[in-house]
Amino acid sequence: MLDQSGTIKIMDFGIAQSVNPGNTLTGAVLGTPAYMAPEQAEGKRVDHRADIYALGLVMYEMFTGIAAFAADTPVAIALKQIREMPIRPRKLEPSLPPALEKTILKCLEKSPDQRFQAVDELDAALATVLPVGGVMENPPVETPRRSFFLTAGPQELPSTPRHLVRTLLSLIQLLYLVLYLFALWKLHRLEYVVSQFLPGGAWLLVALIVLVAVVGIAVRLYVLTALAFDYRGLGEDFHRMFLLFLIVDEVWALSPLLVAYKIGMGLAIAATVALAFLPFSQRTLMRMGYRSQT
Image (cartoon, rainbow, N blue to C red; front, side, top):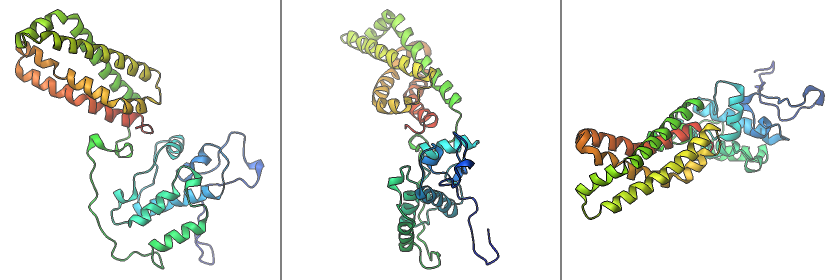
């Protein structure tokens, strides 16, 4: 806002510290979630570095045109302030100098110790990026890099309700369990089919099918249990075990070819491609539902 002397003043800058203890209720948090520092949202002790964080949020919005964090409710915004990092400003506005992006992101560090420790430090950093008057002349323009959907970071993925992600992931795990159990049930039939293609090595392929099915049942039961209890560390666990999921699922993706004689080669190939793609779909769903871990 402008006062009578023409001085610009920020009226809603978040509250770093309540001057009058009587204004603060037990368990209450003062401030605006969209411009609130993580430690402030968690109810921890705050100082002037919370305002440096808030200024970083203001600069982010000024230079990119969008808020760093947005959600449907104030609580959801506060949780994002605590858990997530915003999209890098240059992905939204490629003309920004890299040094300016670095300055903004340093203001938005989750740990106060990682931010600028004083406004003078921030002022000095901005002075090396912006000329006097704060106007950038002929800024370099770069073509933004478009991320592939399967490799996009958590911030680049669409916001999806967690219950929907959990439902889809649970259905995928149940699908695999049905396939594993059916294969073990029809193991004698699979052995006969395999022997038609590999007369001398049928036993080795059957043993591989059994091994993959047993390992697959174990990991699917783990994922289903974690989904049932909405275990927040599931995304991180899945990320660590992704290579195991990939190996098991890609080997299993070849299973439709064993029954191609019965369902037709075209359908068998289509099923193989779908199963081969499924591990990456699961990884994307994990990123969407458990953003802070993956």
